[in-house]
Length: 156
Image (cartoon, rainbow, N blue to C red):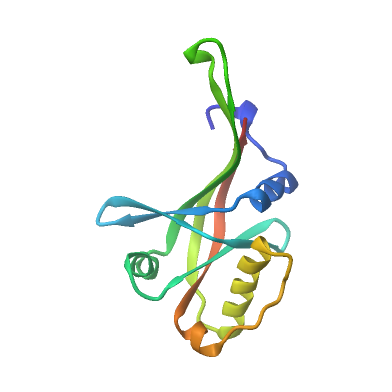
């Protein structure tokens, strides 16, 4: 990281930043071209400081096709955006917090694991941790687990 003075290494602070992010952007590759797609997400910390992200998708379409083909993807999320004004153009700046990384993709097939992933998503956006899911709806949704393999975090 070029600006090490902006690097965040304290995992509890990184977790706090992630909890305030409301959009996860996936970086996929489609025919040697970048394909970036925003998704709603949830997360949990497993066994120490192992970050796991969850999101859902339709079972068909470009995103679903690419997720089934790619074992690893990149991701980015950000929050706390604030413009810092100045008297001259080059003095302007922007405050932010962002988390980026790489992750291993796993399409969840077991309904209990899928429900768990959906509960992680729902708990990220609501105060409720457990929900009921219609079995027919579960058949029409792709639930994806991202096991994070590399992670970096910056704030300014």
